[in-house]
Image 1 (cartoon, rainbow, N blue to C red):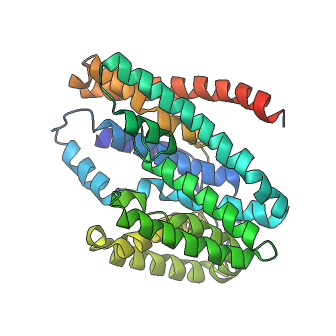
Image 2: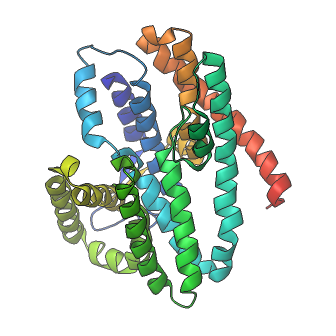
Length: 346
């Protein structure tokens, strides 16, 4: 498995540039850059999912599993962090009109795309002969349960959209009060998930979403402090890195430690890109097709496992990868056409 990691590192390094002394990439949070960062983690998520379907015991597999264990849910924290950041940026620029449009343009649009995906997974289960529980199948359309698809991330995203809409409509005249409301409601929601006995993955990274919104609010001050010169940046980066390592200990036993660890992970990556930049059309593609590549990849995996291809790990991973790429392209093309009919042309 380390071979695939090395390939990913090679792709990153081939497009890597570093800022000159006392200079910085001020567009480090631009949609293009955040898409590239998310593209890197999209590939890591694919590898993490693929090993669940094959048996690996090679000499280069054990180190990968150590890496996978350490990363855990860190592979999705930038998704949450940059989603929150983007929403806060849009709310500041477009005001209440943007928030009022969110139920249709954000929440409904994402939900119906996801609902179509769930139907595809139900069809996949039928093909592979896997029996589905009726109640779980119904709740799968909310992301609360699964019919073979990745679900907790979608459940959290739907919840965060609702929380943000509610908070910003209550505090129409103050984005900062609305942001405080988002943090409070997120805490209430996370506690409710905990009391209901949901798996910890449903709530131990959720605060990355409002943390991204807070970063948007504080970004001018953060930039002023860290982009003063290289010494300031190295000091800040080292401090965040040190805290990241500190909170990595006992994170499995503490929800608070894990939540802070996740936020620091997203922040560490973000601050790193003040000083480095990655230009890659390959990674850009994964960033642009982030939803479809992420949510559809278990369909080829399930079908290939059913066909017995998982007995040959290399063939399984390669075929799963390219099948997911093709499926994502077809899905996004279809959704673009359907969106045009539902929402009208942009």
